[in-house]
Image (cartoon, rainbow, N blue to C red; front, top):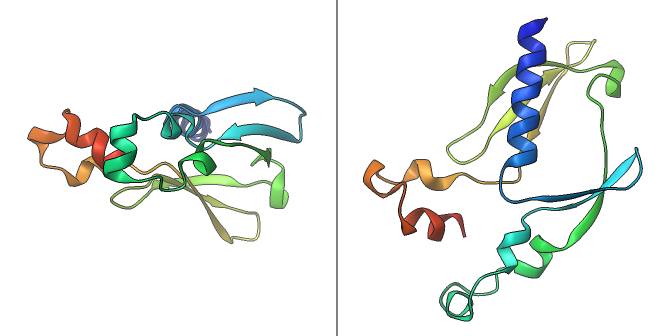
Length: 128
């Protein structure tokens, strides 16, 4: 049980802190969130080189429903952390045994870079 609670806390921190997302508390059933607020705050040169790429849309605050994994679908239980080469996810199971997956919208492509480049400007360019 403690392991499940710790796993939930770790993923909550990862999902909430990843990227410079901005949250504003509104109601208990929904919240305003910006997928990636800093995505729209790049220089003109950066925009010229890499384009607009829906920057305004990614930075726009959007109202989303708040879910409580302990309440939806009769209560979901975290069973495994996961993800591919660029994403992070949390696999959940409901009382009937059906599995569900929560995936972050934030990508982490720096794992594709050689280790020598992971803490350089190349990481920032790749994340854009």
